[in-house]
Each structure stands twice: as structure tokens, then as C-alpha cells.
Length: 231
Image (tube, rainbow, N blue to C red):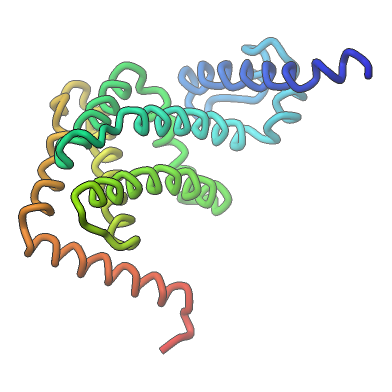
């Protein structure tokens, strides 16, 4: 087999990685609207054709960049999960790390916000973004289920999904506040709020009943939306 057959895979991976690194720098400087495929290619030292060959479009390049970042974040959060801690303490380490990384390098989160805005008017982008959020939701739901199992209880799939929505909502919301008001969010606020929520659910029967009712309502609402013609 010719030597090129051996090199093609690794060379393709290196090219893709270089394009993603270049895209991160260009998007950070220009934003999504200002960035161009030509500038990304020039930054990486390749032709515009290389960008299209690997990603197909500027939108796909941004999505790939965010996928890479999200995958790394999820892997880090999974590594930080410590089942030996009390359940209400477990969210704090990952949440504190999330806010620390956002302050250290806010550009990936800025790109997420830009993508969210564009996705409001682009159904394909919206579906891709929902898919990415699905991985984040699955991770958070898994943490909730594992924590409950350690405590000797069981949570419904719908309840853990709604808990995951809460984690994502607080993380994104506080991230956006920090992005616009640097230093305005206390470093440990996200982790503390998640710990308070977990502790409340553990100690308050009323709180558990309320969340179960919300989760059941969400399940019923989804069933109706999936079957709009049903009575």
C-alpha cells in the first residue's frame, strides 16, 4: 500500500485540528457574523477548500468547534464527579470549575451565545444546538440518577431531565450575567445554589412532590406535542 494511505488519517486529523484552532481565534476576534471562511483558512495556513472539505460551511465549523469544547467540558465534569461526597456537595466542584473556566476563557461561551441567537432563525442550527444540549442534559441527568442511587432512592427519567434543565438554565444564565458584568457573579454562587436545591429536595417532602408534579406535567406536555391530533 502506498505511504500516503498510512498518512491520510493522521494528516486529516491534524488538518481538522488546525482549522478548529484557527476558527477559535478568528471567531474570538470577529464574532460569528464577522468571521469568514477565507480568514479561517488563512489563519490556519490552508486554502478555503480545506475548510469546506472538512466542515462544509462556516456554520458547521462553528458547531464543530462548540462540539469539541462541550465534549471536553463533559469529560472534565465526569472526572470531577465524586460519589464519596454527600450528594448536596457533589454539584459544587463541577459548577465552580465551570465558572472558573468561563472567566479564564470566555470565548467559547460567547460563541455559544452567538449560535443561540442565530439558531432562533435557522431550524437546522436550532436542531444541532438542541442535540449538543442533549449531551449536557444527559450528563446532568446521569449525575442526578447516580446521586439518588447512592442515597438509596430512585428518580424518574422525566424528573432527572427537568433537574438537568435547571442545571443548564442556571449555568447558562449566570454565565451570561458574568459575561456582561465581569466579576458580578460570586465565584461560588452557581455551586452553592445547586447544593441548596439538592439539599432542599433531600429534606423537604413538599419540594419533592412539587418537582414530581412539574416533571409529570412536562411529560404530559411532551406527549401532546408529539401527538398534536390526540384528544
